[in-house]
Length: 221
Image (cartoon, rainbow, N blue to C red; front, side, top):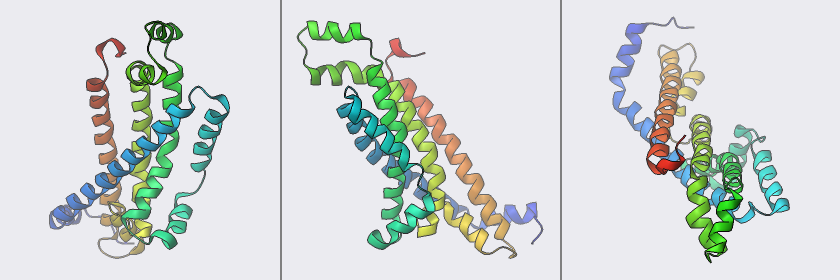
């Protein structure tokens, strides 16, 4: 195996800086698209089932079972109907992002104090209006925590999606692993892995800011 050289790593970064930035932007892009889709689906499921015990249990259980499916196996299955690239990657990431958002939507909506709900009903507010103007704003910090967890998972799984020619930094990781022994094999794998970790930290910090600025002052911990 080729011995690691810090000087060679610096040269590698210098020669491929534009490509690395492009792959990082692709990585963030595919994760963002997947999270938006997952939020629409998962929050919809949560809002429809939060007060219905059997559908609620089925929804959370089904989303939990989804996480037990190995990512490589799911991506391999998606190749046949959807081909390679962005489409199977987005489908897989959206699929794996569902559980934390579904679960936290249900938990957040159910934890709204009953006194608040009764007061809203006493003011003549209907179920839909209570849901969108009372429950969702109160449950939002909990829901956003679920989205934050899903984002971290999606960033990691997106790297594996290079298996189906998916976009992002996983390309470098797979290229490094497939060319072990070559001069830049370790550099490819190291740069891809470290950049994924950096992206995860940056996105997590972004969600901290989003939570702060989208949560009403009275609900902040």
